Each structure stands twice: as structure tokens, then as C-alpha cells.
Image 1 (tube, rainbow, N blue to C red):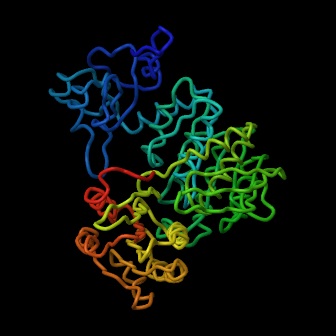
Image 2: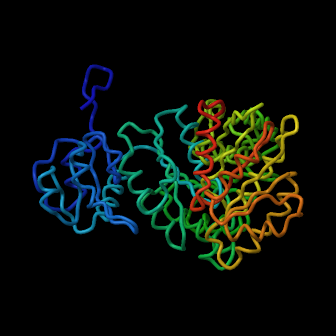
Image 3: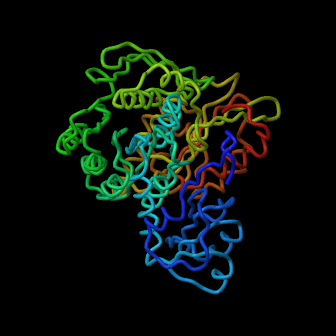
Length: 482
């Protein structure tokens, strides 16, 4: 085990007796005394981890067991065994590997003394999770998952990875259908449950926005006794959220937003070139001012949630607020890159990871606030928003007003659903339309010129990220912006 900096040995994340107590199964081989981590991706193995061979839709983790053990995994949790696995290292044979991971996640939650914050919402949950982890770290060690580990695999592994010394743990919860949030919240058992927003994301699985609000409100069912709820009262159907929190027996409800909210936004001033927003707000009637290291009023509203959580946990606000200045966009979620073109520089805004109508409007609004240099243009490369069901055509076409308000000069569209938006905007704004992102790469190289500001946004499945990487490879070999 690595040393802890005080001359001693760092405690393992899990000891074998702890794992044995949490998981039923047959041990084949000799298990080490302790484990450094937990993973279901053999490529992450660095040495000493527990590897769970999870069977997914596209691949079966059992195919990578031997490789994981050869890379240094201390134990592989499997539901079947072959000779190659036996020869590679110790195995714990269980009936269901995902059920075993969930059991270890529950054990991780049961043993931790960290205060747990659960975050869900149609928009902003990953960014809010990152903001919370950063801000809470000003008070003490804070644990949060990388990226969007928010599903039936991601939540249990996040819980199983909570360090022994964590004072806070931030757990993100996503869903595609009713009932999923309730299950995740039951595992996470948050001290504070947050709903960031309600929007048309995954509306294909619901009758209407009210159905999405009810599904997001399931998070309150998992809140521990004496816990709190943080609710954005500007969200559609906020009353559904408030009623669900009360029905769950939550007495401490802190609201965020405008007007009469407990934590309310007074003013948000963007410096779009620097990529920051200065915020004036009130927290329980007390005025505060701070800076968030990401631009956009929607980022200011995410920051209100951070302050509300701090208030719910009884924390001092100043260090929490001050840490938000250090916030930086994640890849695919607003990160900026300078493209060094012949004759000058263009600005690329990478929002390629995900999209729904609400987040698309927020990104377009931010694009509209950026003044291109010289003779540059505002270019929006927008790809299909997936999982919108029967309303997809109308929701895509409905973005035309946001495109116009953002003063987009050239709209490039990717995917069959974005064709509805292309048809809804004036002809002089229409740029190339393609069915697949890869078909746009050469057109963009030919089109881009110094001074342009180009936004990429779409659902991750549309693969706009590959276009971003191609342009960065050719024109941004050294990163200039966050």
C-alpha cells in the first residue's frame, strides 16, 4: 500500500474482510488483504483494484477478466469462470455481478460518515455536481464521480469508491424511465436532495413534463430522516417537486431561483470572452456576491444550488462561494478552445456531450452574447436531440426563435431531426445539413475563418465530439483556454 505522507501506510479503500461481509460468493485463489479501488473498466486498472465483470448491452465484462487481473487487479468479481481467469488471479464467484456491485455500493454508503448530496434534474446535474464537489472541498475532502456516472452502474460504483476520509459525497442520479431515480436514491440515501431543473430530456418515455417532474421528485424518497431538499422553483411543475418533498416528510426545503426563492438571483453579468459570470444573490435574505469560472446565467443559477446546499448543511458560505471562481467547464460541456487558423484565431465552444431543448437554448443564448472579432461570424453546429419521442419534430423546429435571438449567422445541422430546425430558420442562415457528423468535417475546415465563434451542441450519440477533436487536432495543438 502507498504511504500516506506521515510515514505510515495508507489504509486500503476496502479490506478483504469488509468485501467478504458485503458480498456472498465463492473465493477461488487467495485474496489480498486490501484493495485500492473499484472498477468495471479493465482499462482503468492500475493495481490493487476490485474488478467487477458486468454484463452490458454491448459487451460482457467477463471477456476482460484475465486482462484486468494481469494488469494488477487484486480480485475479479465474476458470475462464471474459465481456465484463463483461474490462471490469472483471485476470483470471487457470485450469482449476479451487478447485484454484487450494488451490494458493495450499499456497504460503502453504510460505512461512510460523509454527508451525502444527491443531484438530479433534466439540465445541469453534471455541472452542478462538479460545482458542489469543488465548492465543498473548501470545507473538507469531497468525493464525486468522474463525468456522468449517474445510472444503475454509476451510482453504486460511486458509493463503493467513497474514500474513508471523505467529509462530503456528491452523487449524481439520472434516469430514462419512471422508477429509476427512486431506486438510485434508495441506495444513495442523501442528506440533501437536489432537483436542478425539469425539461424535455427523455420525454419520449413520458406523457408530458409533469411526468418528468414526478420522476425527478422520486429523489426525495431516499432522503435520510432530518435531511433537506433543494428545489429550483423556476422549474416547470415546481409544485410537483415541492409537494413530493413534503410528502416524503422532508421539513427543510430550500428553494432557489428568482423572486421569492430562499436563495435568489439578483443579477448575473457575463464576461463571455473570459468565460466567467459575476453573480449577485441573496441567501436567506443576506446579500452575497461571487464569481463563477464559467459563463452564462444558467451557470449562475447552478451556483445558487451550491449555496443552498451549503446552507442546508450548515456550512460557512464564504469559502464555498470563493471556490466557485476556480470552476472550469468539463470536456463537451462548454469548454473553449482557440483555433489558430491562417491569418488569425477563431473561438470554438464545445457543448458536444449532451443536449435537450432547455440546454440548447442556454447555449445559444451564450453564443449570442459573444461578439465575434473583426469580420467573424456566429456559427452554430447543432445535432439531433435524442429521446424526445413524438414531440421531437416540434421541439427541434421550436429552437428557431433561439437561433434568431442569438444572431446566428450560419446554422449547420446534423441529423434527420435537426432538418426540422433548418426548415424553420430563414434561408440566409442555413448552412450545410448532413445526416452524420463526419460528413461535415471538410465543410467546416473550408468554412472557418479568423474571428468566427463556433458552437457545437447535440446529443452525445450524434458524435459531434469527433468533429471537435478533429478541429482541435488541426488548429489547436496547444490549449489556450479552459
